[in-house]
Amino acid sequence: MKSTLLAFAVLGLAATFALDSSTADESIEFRADSAFVKLPDTIELGPCSGVAVNSKGNVYLFHRGKQPIICLDPNGNFLHSWGDDTIGSAHALRIDDHDNIWVTDIGNHQVLKFSPAAKLLLALGKAGSAGDSVDQFNKPTDVAFGARGEIYVSDGYGNNRIMKFTPNGGFLTQWGKAGDGPGEFNLPHTIVVDRQGRAIVGDRENDRVQVFESNGKLVAVWPGFAPYGLAFDGQEHLFVADGRANKVLQLDDHGKVVNSWGQEGSKPGQFQLPHMLATDTLGSLYISEIKGERFQKLHRE
Image (cartoon, rainbow, N blue to C red; front, side, top):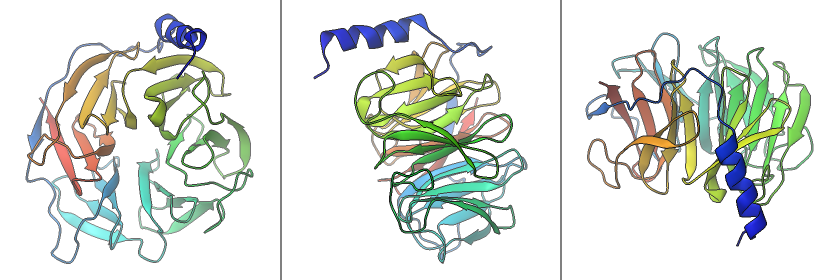
């Protein structure tokens, strides 16, 4: 149990600081698209852990099954897939400004970068070797990018730290350790970088989001939900996949919930452990589900 002093410190941070962005706090509405994903019979989805959309509107799905990286066109039609010989166990998938595909592999303890043509361009971490040195990970959970191409990795399951690298993979800095105090983590599970260059981290098992400057200085703590996945849309609205509540949340600039969608279930618009999520240029949401073993698209109204 947290001490009274610690609780006041966390609440003070949450109340005092907010993201300095132009994000409006208005509530957004969505409707579920039950027929978006169209896969060939040769692909059977396993637990779905990651999703992202590139500049052309193509949707990339990441799942724990055969052909773990799947690419769909903007209408949900299958284009191509790969990864059987490369991926140990799927976790997060992100796409950078050049449409390169990045994945975190918790089976092989690596972060991998692929070209749009599925060519492996960069591998961070030592394949099959968990560790806490600056060239190792222990089940890395997510990856994000700074304005100059810096690479942020939430090294979550084993090391409870955030690592920062150059665009070519050179180590820059790291911060965090196991714990429930400000700046500490209990499974940093997801990470995004805002327009001000701040790293926003889903501290999953501490049921909070923590916001840091690019050098690791703590800026804010937002408690009250289990952030399995985080994603911004083009207007810097922030969305959270709360895997414990089986909901998707919209946060305002102070980390307060302004809207939510879903409940536990298998119908369109319901969720079974929503894990990661992404948006497209039209503001639609894509959500991957672990227990549901599916992806859903929510059209923005």
